[in-house]
Length: 127
Image (cartoon, rainbow, N blue to C red):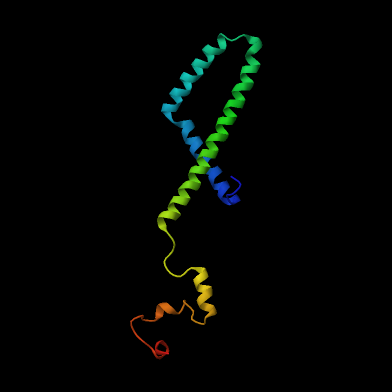
């Protein structure tokens, strides 16, 4: 998440923590966790005790990798969502900063233009 400002990264992390806490309390997922724990216990009962440390090491690495993947997916989804909103909103109406600079150099500031009625001609227009 290095291309995200630190304050935004903190906000993302806080959101992840909030959602994770809510997921931990979800009743349906509690049932699934219980089923998973029972299946794991059944698996470990049949596992040779000498192989248990290797399995637990693999399991830790597997879950850590999956957590990193999920975090990256969340962050990328957030970036994509922001880009979509920006694209849907389009560019703001009115002159761009480059146009402002170019017209200001010509002496005709676009900042004063909205006060002027484009249908009304002035002496300056006839020059």
